[in-house]
Amino acid sequence: MPHFFCRLATEEGRTLSQSFFAPSHKECRAHFEAEGFCVLSIKKDWKRISTPSFPFERKIKDKDFIMFNQEFVALIKAGYPILKSIEIIVARIKNVHLKEILMKVENEIRAGKSLSEAFAPHEKNFSTVYIAALMAGERSGNLANTISRFIDYAKVISKTKSRIRSALTYPTLLLVFSFLLLAVLINFILPRFSAFYADFEAQLPGITRGLIAFSLAMRGQLPLLIVFIFLLFLIYFQIRKREKTLVLLDRFKLKIPYGRSIWLESGISLFCRTLSLLLGGGISLLSAVGIARQAVPNKFLIQRLKRLPEHIKNGESLSESLTKSGFFPLLALDMIRIGETSANLEGMLIDVADVYDERIQRKIDTFVTLVEPIIIIFMGLIVAVMLLSVYLPIFNIISVTR
Image 1 (cartoon, rainbow, N blue to C red):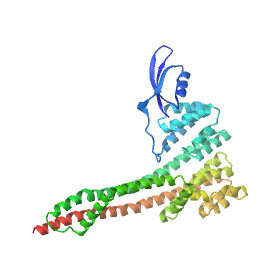
Image 2 (cartoon, helix red, strand yellow):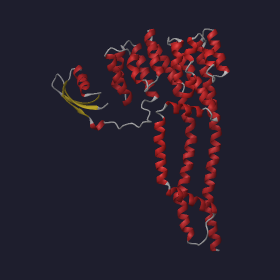
Image 3 (cartoon, rainbow, N blue to C red):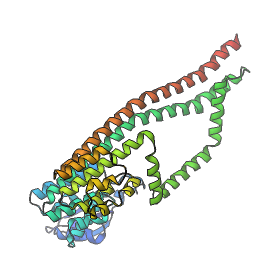
Image 4 (cartoon, one colour):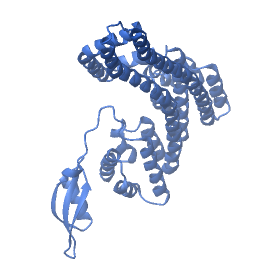
């Protein structure tokens, strides 16, 4: 969606220029004419054309989406109509991708669609859970409170993702720094020492010869390596489009010793938290479980939950149906069973999610605690190899000159 540079005239005869973000010339003209301006000219603002995004770029950040919903709820509670609330937010929102979607939503609502119907085509940019929450709020007549519940849900999910990213940042930086040091040693330091050492007509130490041979091999195969990496990226993006391949990859993830428990428990936590949100919004259990299983971040586990609505439709309880999935632990099943018998399923699902969120956080902390010394030892070995490959030739030079 482009920016347009518009020349406008007011009723007093003054002219002014303004850049405006709109889907087309027609909608840009209609906007200013509705505000009482005489539109003199409209043309694309080439200075503000946004660069195309990469396929893997996350277009809408969690914090931007949460902020939009917070402002939306505040305006609804203040008595503003839905359409007017979105118009106010769109006018001052900064995220270009979110603004473009909200402008399309605004047009759909103006055409007579409900809020959930207007957001439905953009499900991939948000989530099925958000569309379901909007639908539940419209049905119950309490849209503001339903969206507020979704905001709390989104904050917890965003916080969990942020913890995982921050936990992996430090080990990743250490690994990258280690390989950069090794690359500098192989490509810049050792070749100079090799030429210098050759003048003394002495043989280089084995460790230095090995690193130099590795450096020459890497330089010779660099074009092939670049092509190979490029092909891997192409294959990866093709794989992402195939559902069966994604299921196989997610099944393989569950066989990784330490990662298995983290992926399983995060799936259980997200399923329970999403189901609680939908039940609290007034959606029936049969409809809610079909939506909640889509929140599980593992395609293989989603398939294991495929028959969940069918079991509930046949009269089984939620705990009995989840038992047949084969991956819910006894603790979670017992807590859900207690919630069903005490008529507090919604609250117990939140408790289950909180329990497994805490377990995930402890495991992530343990993982980081174990990984840090391993990476530090690995860096120490690299530094030791660097020092030996550089200083051993120097010591040999001293012995040769003597």
